[in-house]
Length: 276
Image 1 (cartoon, one colour):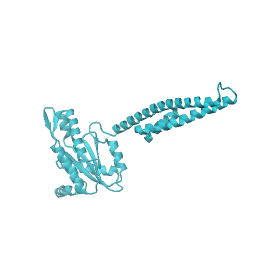
Image 2 (cartoon, one colour):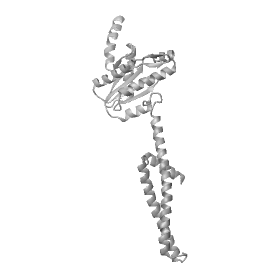
Image 3 (cartoon, helix red, strand yellow):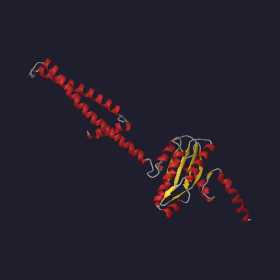
Image 4 (cartoon, helix red, strand yellow):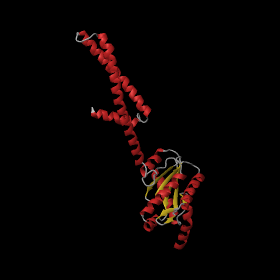
């Protein structure tokens, strides 16, 4: 019995049956109607059987008129109270579970999607677009020179700027450490560059309180195309290579995966000439 009740409660929570007070009221009304109908029917059957065997201390009509109405009132009152208590308890459990699930998907420091939640959301969308991998430049120097509190403030400040630039139409998350990700739902590379550059400029212009002074940081970014049939692993590796190149070329810049070969071509030619 206890196991069945637990399964029923879990089903109600998962179905979202008790999300609003109106849902609870509907549950109470339905429960009262069923309970009073069963209680009244049970009383009438019992009274009829007792009258048949001449065991009632009064007439059947009196028992039906008085006892039936009394049973109806008591059953409705008790059932309504119990149903309301149960409904409110399930409602509170539903809210607690929803809040827990929401918090489990967010990075506690940045307030952005954590890696797991971002990966799930990215995998569930079939749209093409651009995958962007951001990295705070010289973040270790911030922690070493100003303390971990300043590092946390930097993470929070960068997250606020990314959240402001990448509206809910897009995805943005923190992959861990000083690394952030975004998925831009657009196939227009111009739109992608506008958003990425706005994010980088806004972060560079932000002043972050650190002890007695303020610090500023910059972002490097690697961009990869998310095309039909391209897995997250492939997109991430391409963006990571582009980010590594952006770091190698002096940081504070964004590089698209297609630019890698073009930017590396001159250095390869020089290296080839030296070998000859």
